[in-house]
Amino acid sequence: MFSKPVLAPGYVLRKLEVPYVYNIPDDQLYELDEEAFGFLKKCNGRNSLSKLLPQGEDKEILEYMLDEGIISMQGTRRIKTPSSPIPSLRYLLLNITKKCNLACRHCYLGVSVNTHMEPSTFEKAVSQFEDMGGLKLMISGGEPLLHPEFWKLMEFLISCELRIVLLSNGTLIDEKTALRLSGYVHEVQVSIDGISSHDLLRGKGSYDKAMRGISNLKNFDIPVSIATMIHRYNAVEFEEMQKLFSDLEVVSWNVDVPCVAGNLKENMDSVLDARDAAMFLKYGFGAGGHESSGDYTCGSHLCAVSPDGKVNKCGFFEDEPVGDVNDLRSAWVEICKNYLWTLDKLDCHACRLVRECRGGCRFRARLYKGIFAPDPVLCHANGIIEFL
Image (cartoon, rainbow, N blue to C red):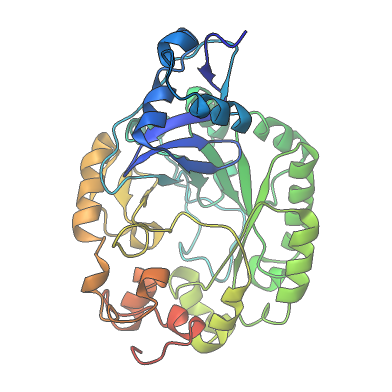
C-alpha cells in the first residue's frame, strides 16, 4: 500500500541558507536536515519505499512526513530544487501598476499614474524569482486590480510553485472578483487604517467598500490579512480594530508607521511623533516580508520590482534601482552589496536588542539621521533611547 511516496500537493522544496520544505497554502516553512531533504527529493511517486529506505534504515522520517501530511502515497510529480543565492531571495514585491482608484493622504507613491507593467516583464520577474528559490510573490500597485491585463497576469501564475498574495485597498473586490481571485491567490492583504478614521485618510465611503471586499473574500474562503498604518486619527481605535480583526479571523495583522514620503509630505497633520506612534506597534501579529536572518539588517530576503521592471530594495527605494528583471539574480547581488548591511555597520550595533529589531526600517532611519542610524520608532517601541 505504502510503496511509492510522493511530495504532497502544496509542498515545495527549497535549498535556501539551509534545506526547507515549504507549505504554500499554510505559509509554513519547515527546516530540514540533509537526510530528510535528500529523502524528499526522491519522493516523486516513482521510487519504491524499499529504494528510498533500504532494509534496516530508520523509518521514523517516513512516519513523521506522513503524519505531517508532507508526503502522500498517490500520484507522481516532478520535484524541483531551485538554486538559491545567499542571502536567499524569499519574497518579491511586484508593483504592477501606479494607477489607483483612491488618493490616500499617506500614500508614499504620491499621485496615481496610468503606468502598468508589461505582461512580458511580469513573466520574466516571476520565472526568475521561482528559479532563485522564491517563496512568496506579493502583487501590489497602486491598486493591482486596475492593471488592464490583471487576469492575464494571474493566468501565468497557475503553474508557479509560489505563494501568491494580492495587496489591495479592497474597495473593488465585489463577489464576481472574489470568485475569480479564489482560483489564483492564496491570500489577499487589505489595507484598513482605522474604523471611523479610515475614511479620513482614504476617502469617504472607502471603509465600507473595503469591509465589503473582505466579506466577499471570506465568502469564497480566501484567507485575508490586514495592513494598518498608525496615524493621529486611529490612535484611539486600536483596541476596537484588534477585536474586529480577531472576529474576522484574519491570518495576520501588519501594523507599521508610515514613512514621510509621497502624499504624506503634504498631510503632516496626520503624522504622530515617533515616540507616540511606537506604543501602537505592540498590536498586530504575523511576520512580514521585511524579516531578516543571520547578521543582516531589515529586509535580507526581500526586493521589489516597479512597473517598468526596475529592481530595488523596496518600494521606498524605487528611485534607486540596481538593475532590472532581465537579470533578477544580478540585481539581487547588487542589492545585497549596496542596500543590505550587517548589523555591525549600524550606529546602534552595540544595542542589546539589535538582533531583535535589526535596526528597524532603513528608509525611516535615513530620513532620521542617515542610512546607518537607528530607526527612532523601534527605539521608542523597545524603550531604547541611548542611541537616539
